[in-house]
Length: 224
Length: 115
Image (cartoon, rainbow over all chains, first blue to last red):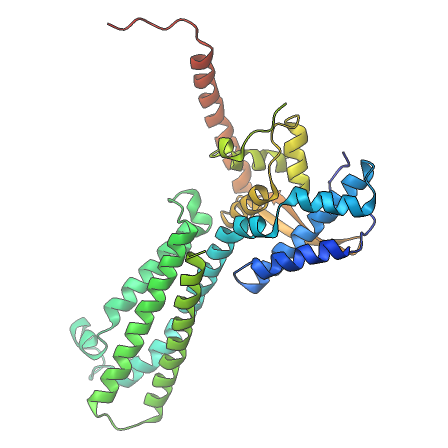
């Protein structure tokens, strides 16, 4: 068998069968685009290596490609095998998005509704922004999921893909409930319309839209 | 030698992959081939087992990957991180203990009588 250490070698042009296989596989992978593209590029290189091996073993090129594809498995089986990693990648990327954008949404509500005078303690802050407990739960869930699906899983119990997706759904739902609560509070408060309020509502509506998309995607990935 | 079912490797696949990468950077297909040739064909693991396992090890920080362009093709090669070297050492110690205990039990022909 040929050595597969990193050495220069001749290129093998994609046969129609190989291109069709990768196209079928691409259609069945679900998850972040850059991860899917990386998987396809990596598998393409592996398939080329397998084809080279079969040619070296005496098969004609077309049969070598067929043998390599058979060796790698059906597109459905390979897509299934990568499902967990893709789901985890999706969960981690989405959670990072919620963590990164949380302050960008929250700051407008804080500026708009902060208790006056400014430093009156936690009770006054909770009265002005009652969704703070939801934010705390969302941050704890996000932190825990990132920790147990990343490098810290060497020491902590690993969170599987289904639980990572469940956590992502929970975080998106908490954000949605929080945003809807804040918008409803503003509407029933009778507060005069100000640019700050418009920015806060726009930020929350944007996050609600993203949360709905997240819940839909995560639910679809969990059901696979 | 008959190929082993991937389920039999549950709990040991990480250590096997780390051991294969201990000798130097390798790409995914080379790892599959190294497992097969290093076990005289007993560990003929499917693509769907090895590639996702490599991605998971990278997520755990035990291995890292680099993309290179070789002969016009993009290739991802994996190498052990310092944490991966440490984890491999730990898993070797665990395996030594485990295999010694299991071998002692499976090769024992006389069992102590029970009351």
